[in-house]
Structures are given as structure tokens and as C-alpha cells.
Image (cartoon, rainbow, N blue to C red; front, top):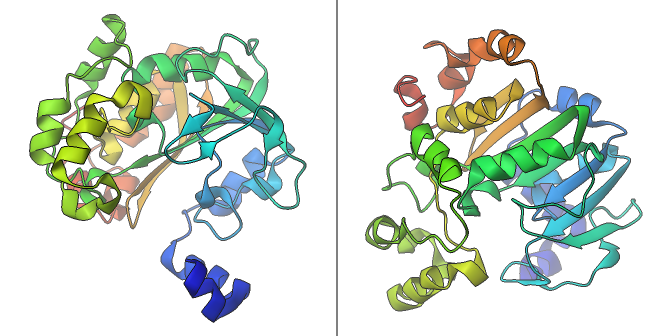
Length: 292
């Protein structure tokens, strides 16, 4: 990217990124709903939320703090705490916190108006526990903005979609990050040709075995229907659900405690002719909603 920037300049690189990153449907509504919110991001910062990304919402937030599982990750390198979360050039840095995404005990209930997580939840062995914890730190009308990799567009394309029932069992069994249940499937079906950063087969194997420290492994594999079903099960009202190329599932949802109202309000997303299925560019989304 540095060589491209030297050739094209900053404006040229921004234009190229915009061409490569298709904007999310209903983008104006995302911005309107998130405007002025105090946000907590898990695993940030994300280029997708910057002005050139497919979902440029950093600029409309009031503030954003960030939480990483460690002060050193394979994506960020070494990170300091304090007000060191630089997420947008025109915003004051937010707080940098360190905690497991499934245990945000240092954060009081109802502390944030929005929780953001871009390509993070698939790395968590117990995604329902994480969603319940993120829900806890949200205010009564708080929003969840979740991005996940769609299996059809990634190195997971050979793997089967994880069933919602499996993720419910992970929660009931209190599965932790030491869990290596999915390693045989991953080693057999992960497409290394689409994942140059993973290195050789043996390097990839060792990274998977050390996942407790690297958190690089995709425990679960999603299509859009399964992702929406998981968020709905965790007690969120679905507002927008979409899938866009090259490999993004995008969900905006609101915290809800009324289970009856939740079922009624989100029911349209699980009909056989749901709009996000018809509009999805990914074949897996057009095979019906049988995995709910």
C-alpha cells in the first residue's frame, strides 16, 4: 500500500479504496442512528469505519473507546493503555482498554450507547457469551454494529456454516478460549491459498494450536442468516441486515429486553423471502433459512 500511495498520492489511494469497498446499504440511516453516540469498539480500529470504508461511521460518533484482549496482538503490534485509541484524524483519542471480549467486568452496566465489532466475533470461542456481555454495557436503547466475514468470500468457503445450536451449546458449556474443538476441521478445510498471512501449512497449524495467545483462528463460520439468528437469539432487535462484497456481513441491531416484542419486530428477517437473502451476492444466503 505504501508503494501505491507514493504513486497515486493520498487522494488517489482514498479513491481506490472507495472503489474496492462497496458502501453498505442504508448507510445514511446507520449514520443517523449512530450520530452522537458514545461507542465501545471491540478489536479496533477498523479501516471499514473510516471515511474511505464501506461503513464510515467513526466521523459521526461523539467518542469511541476500544477494547483488545491483550496489549500485543498480531494485528496491532504493541499497544499502550490510557487515551491511546486513535480511531479518526478529526476526533480526540478514546480510551484503550484490555479485557477479554466475553468479560468486560471493568466496564459498568449501561456505559455506552453503541458497541462496534468488525471481524471480531468469529475469533471468539463463545460468541453468545460475548454478545450478552456487550449487551450488558449498552444503554437501554443501545445499538450493536456487527461485521462478520461471510464464508463464501473468505478462506472459510470450504467449511460448513456453524449451526446456531452449536453456539448455544458453547454458551451452556461455558466454552473458553482454550477450546480447540474446531482445529481438525480448520486444518482440513481452511484455504491457505486465500490466506497468505497464515504462512506454510505447518506455521498455520502451530498458530492454531497457540490460538489462546494469538486469537487468529475462526472458531465459527457464518452466512448472513446464521449471523442474524445469533444476534436475534442474544436479545437484539434487528434493524438492518446485509451482505456485501468482498466478504462482509453487516448487522445493525438494538438492545431489547422484551422477548415477545423482539420476536414480532425481527420476524420479517427470517422469512423465506427476506430482502437481505434476495440481495445477497453470496450463494449460501439464497438456500433458505433452514439453519435457524
